[in-house]
Image 1: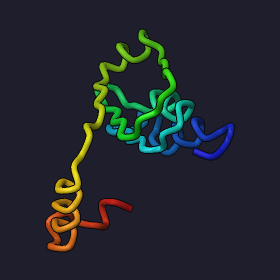
Image 2 (image 1 turned 135 degrees about the vertical axis):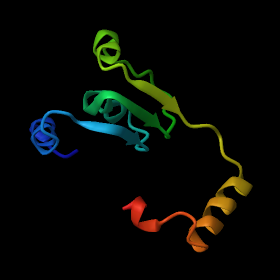
Image 3 (image 1 turned 45 degrees about the horizontal axis):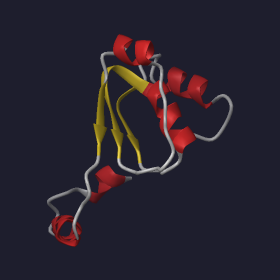
Image 4 (image 1 turned 60 degrees about the vertical axis):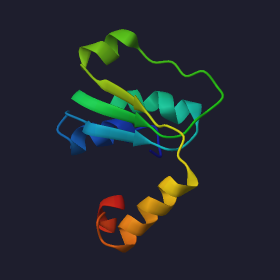
Length: 98
């Protein structure tokens, strides 16, 4: 997200529905807080990054959307090697990552 009107642009792009899955890997508390604004009704918000700050969000808004919040876990070197091998073997389509 890049500007003051980004929410309006995304709202138009999605006909006001926003996104089924919002994925944040920024490690930036403000970006992580803003991500809650873009979850569709019944959507998921996945936080992969870890930040030492406290983040907050509107509880009534979150519940109104009936959203799910998911956090990452610590991965091991073996986990990363496995994912890398799956990418090489074509088991994970790399086009899905763009």
